[in-house]
Image 1 (cartoon, helix red, strand yellow):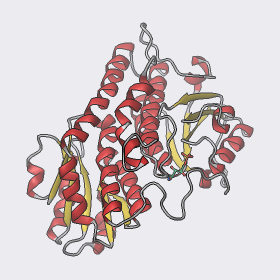
Image 2 (spheres, rainbow, N blue to C red):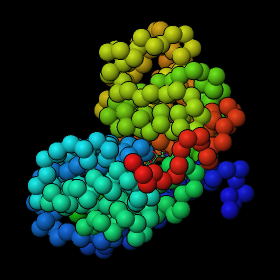
Image 3 (cartoon, helix red, strand yellow):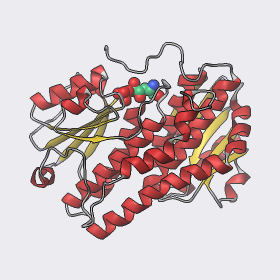
Image 4 (cartoon, rainbow, N blue to C red):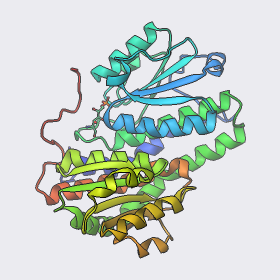
Length: 366
Ligand code: M6R
């Protein structure tokens, strides 16, 4: 069942290039229209959408952080992302032109389900992103995109996250197209670049294992670690920190790098691990300057950087490279080394990476 791999987690991590390809198969028609499983809404209805909430839990929430960036940047629709357990207990502004996007691997997370039921009663349109065909989230949404991760067994989500991010990217492209913010040519270009991330993930597997192993050795005995980044890098950091704490029981927090000086930097003492997402992006220089402040206080810096960036070696103790990629798509590749890092650290600490303590694969009770 594990296909010769020592655990399900690594089997599922290594499947991610396939997940990207399968999630995209058949999604772009010859005329450049995006083809969604069950759109459930007409283009006219989509065009009227003036507010989007992405609601989810855990790793799926982190996929939502990325969607939030893309929907606002590309479709220019105000978008908020919120934990389903919060959303359901407040009184969000919902009208018939509100779109609620529910993201759930299992499609049966209690809080997410309760949130969409409530949102529909209040008149919102609901769109589900799920990995399980016919799951409650799929059944109770107006439209659905199925991630093609196939069954995920390890409690820590890896391949389903990649499927979610790819699917949410499609949704953001669709909204941008319907809203007239992108033409067919632009959509096609981005669609093909999105597909290229499959090979880019494979490149990480083929070339970065040793660097990841060294980085894991550098943080395995720490009591705590900080993950930092800006923009997409911040979203990736949240997911990296969750993965690490969930399977290795090493305390980890993520911060938008610009927040460091507002408190967290007090934690830094010599040897403290700071895992930084410093891929090339419009905020690269800002992130590097935040890292210099950590370096000056003795932090041990592990950077996830863009291949070819030699300068980063001046401040980072360990560098893990990803291939050059458009910032919008960086979460798809840059998250992968953090999944591998978390798994290596967990194994070095003697943890069961597939079945972490206190956690269940699907959280069907509140
Ligand atoms: O099935 P869902 O996507 O709704 O599950 C949400 C979370 O419970 C899940 O992502 C959880 O955080 C994972 N264990 C993270 O690896």
